[in-house]
Length: 68
Length: 68
Image 1 (cartoon, each protein chain N blue to C red):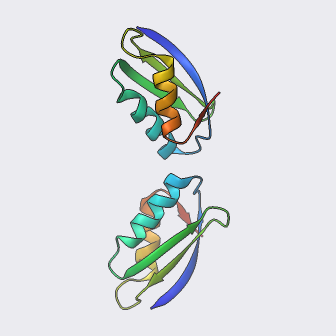
Image 2: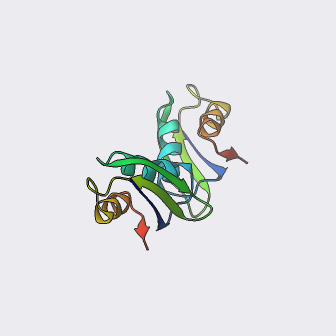
């Protein structure tokens, strides 16, 4: 299991937090995702044999946010 | 049919826009609701025989926003 913190631009409210966390935890291999609106990031616990950084980046971007 | 523009605090993104518009159009008597994020308001077309300002205020506040 790997923990990574990803910088995300454009998250402004609890709806955004929920959208990003749900998009990530819906991916096979992601066990948890915790958005900090204050820090503009999401901390993800994932199994790198099942999911890649690019998969997670795509899932966040599909929700309309930019990954730095 | 009456048109009223209601000032709302705390709407920050398209999710907020959708939440407020849906909450209002789900009320019996509201025919349309259009949020302006830029102007922090929502313009509502409604039939005052079916729905009151207080009903609409409650619906907005139930979504977590403040009506001025």
